[in-house]
Image (cartoon, rainbow, N blue to C red; front, side, top):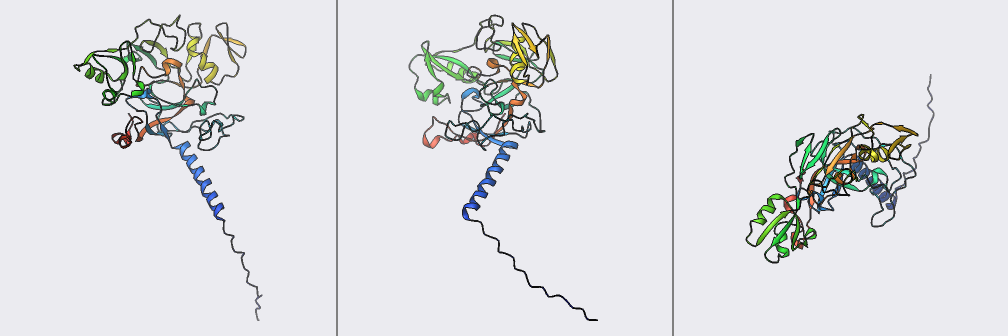
Length: 368
């Protein structure tokens, strides 16, 4: 028996249309933006030091890598945002986001929890004009964690009743009284920022470490160097919880205060309410909470106690007299934590000459 095979005509495929150069560039740019956005969100983000609140541990002009991996990245609360922006579109005042959609934020698992002495980047809590995840980034040192008691006595910080180890490069304000005029070179030779030097009371007010202040005091042409500390009982209205009539605190003598911990319950009294008012009204997600006549109401019912819904932290700058921190505005909520500062990858000195702008000795230094 013969087998007959059907003949088939060869088929020809249409040649794949080559992408235009514009299309290829567009795809490449889109891929780069998506990849950069994912890396920035989930792993590391670049950050620069704009103010001297952490000097001399971190300097104005330091460029840092901030790790999102340590504490875990947060899922976006404000999803309608131009990629790789923060609050505004680059070089403009045009908002880079829309707050029409606000989602509940979750934190993915990280390598560690926020610990005492960590240098932490976080969203500035009092900045209520922006969503929580788009508030201005601040960087400070975590002094106390959730559940701790924090106090400052005559400049020294105490946590749970124990004096803490001070940062190696911690600074205070000093008044230098000199026998004659001090030149700019005098301050620059000692790494004192000229922008933070001003004349007052017949002398020069500067930020300096205690060691540097001692060295300056020993110079022949210096009459005296005075530490500008504030005495106990000298109430400062800038100080949290902003009730100077009850709490006569200042930046050098503060507390003690309890740092809220998730699941912990506190009694609500006229004395305690000022410490937790912002936590309850602004940070813990209570949509139906209000304060009336010095009393707390939730869903119309007066509350004599309150249970915290998340952890909080107490942050301070290493430049203790030139830092607006938790002593001024209170606790940092856990959902405002951005990441841990881990590495200085570049550092430039705005006051240096063209050839000396880069601080070579700070490049690729780890942050402690």
